[in-house]
Length: 413
Image 1: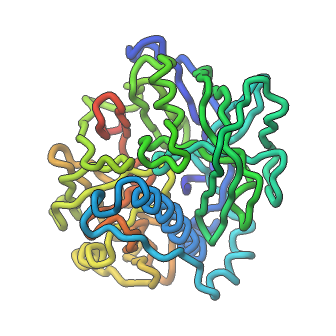
Image 2: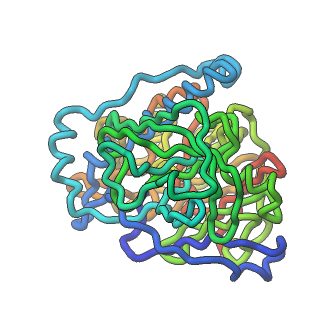
């Protein structure tokens, strides 16, 4: 995910209680470098933006297939559908192979360990999926520096079935399913179900991160298993069923077992989930441009594994129609005059939570114009469901409460 190219750390805080006095307890982990969506010269990397949209579409296509298998799409949302698998247009694909070589930003990653003795991995923390997976020592095509060896762990147990994932650019990975002990910043649980992938195509496995830890709800699990945080709750490994994200140019952290009040002001405003499908999905949303409500009455999925924000194409076109100087640049993306980016704000029936112009601006695309980090994309969720990624989460403190079945926001301190 995109953020400023400076070294950032993640704190995964193990709290002895919910008290903010314990906020300094935990372990700091440097974030790994990832490809950026803005070039060093300040121009937006349109090829990378198109690739990101394809990755997000394929990721959530897999989620919707899981929902359809488990409860039926009609029981999730009346206008939900399975979108086609996304591919990058040929012209973009040719340029991207070279264009991303030297671009650096940061992904929201940290270190976990699996097994006895511990085998360490750098993984992405993703509230838009529910499964844990890492490469296997037997992986064909994986380029990850770390891999899981079940034979080397005295607590490894082989489970039945096979796991398969598919995200951006047609990349896929599959492998057997295991259960083993998992440790995140001193929070240790037993018998966590996960996959160690043995077959990989594309560029899904490798680079700075080894795999992914899903932090969404159990119903979204392709493994049909509780995600790590739910297992931690059931084994009394955390004091509260809450975790919080603080994403910033420095000092970023994931706080497990509560929220870190040093990073926000006032109280957290919680909103109940409106879906049982497995997403952190809340309703009653509206979006305003420079304080004037532009679109009301939609639902939002909050996803730390998505960089940009996406809404239904017609709704996003309508929203940009209310912004002076907005122009389409294709692929569902829009540009605005660089010197007059608006302030967007989202509201779920309480406070307005603002996204400042500098966070929304993803770089120049021509003389005087810059790309906005909000695109129109049919991701299959339904005609009134938006996907809000870390552009929103870098503008607020975000809490995910299993205890309350809710998502909460607070103003940054």
